[in-house]
Length: 354
Ligand code: UT7
Image (cartoon, rainbow, N blue to C red; front, side):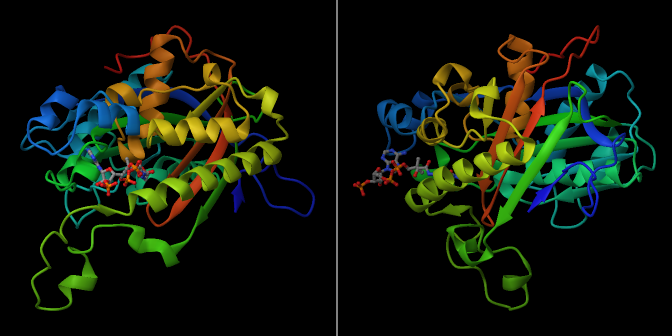
């Protein structure tokens, strides 16, 4: 599915003055840094294996008592501060690690941000959550239901990863990223282009937390050992991630009417440095055009893309007017890609994305 095409004769789409336009960005990672050496001390792994197989050197973990909403509030605050106006009409939170199974975490984040009684809800699409959230927020704007939306993507992945499972514990980490979207025109800096989204629920077991949902709670049986933890068929997921991110990127470029040469920056979900390199190579995008922070933050789930955008804008790797291709892949299975031009956030400084 492609959402966000301009309205045209016989085809529904975004009205000319109601395209989602990014006007604020913020990122946050919790202060505790965990290096590969820290993991080597408690897992059967090595710094060399982690670096060469994943590209990760360090990552941030939440401490005891810190939850996803705490990360989301920090990123949301930074995004609102960098925007021209801190009022929004709705809050969309993309997460796989809500504070509780019930209720959703979005309303609590909106309340803590002092946003009054605006509608707030969660979107669950694992590592593709930011792109699903972007389509959802864009839809609220295009329909006229909201003129401004705060989209936050936050995950405290270490709260569901098995700390003793070396195949996931070395990759996944915690963080949050957020953007403020406003209604604008498709040709403005900050405008989000067409968003390509897909899913394949037949492969839902390739990335899963087997226990804890209604499937297990409807019986009296205790979950099998380890079923409360995140589980991933890493090697098979690797292959699919490369294929789906490449294919959806090509579809998003075609929908936007962009050529590969038009892409100034590729901002892929930071799943694994080898996946990022393979996608860039298949798309024929040279490494200089690829944004990456995986070495410092690992795989932060839904937060990955907006955290990357915030940190890259802060470092100057991402500049106003640059044309950006986004792509992600995650559990569900889900995948997607989108285009945007990076906005000039003007006199409002890009806040410290840590
Ligand atoms: O975020 C969106 C969804 N997630 C992803 O996109 C992640 C996709 N998958 C991956 O990034 C990679 O598959 C992993 C990083 C998870 C694993 O890397 P791999 O190169 O695919 O390794 P593998 O699973 O094929 O395992 C190779 C070997 C195995 O040993 P044997 O069977 O060959 O003796 C593993 O047991 O590496 C072993 N291994 C490790 N060794 C040291 C797995 N994890 C580790 C580790 N340290 N941390």
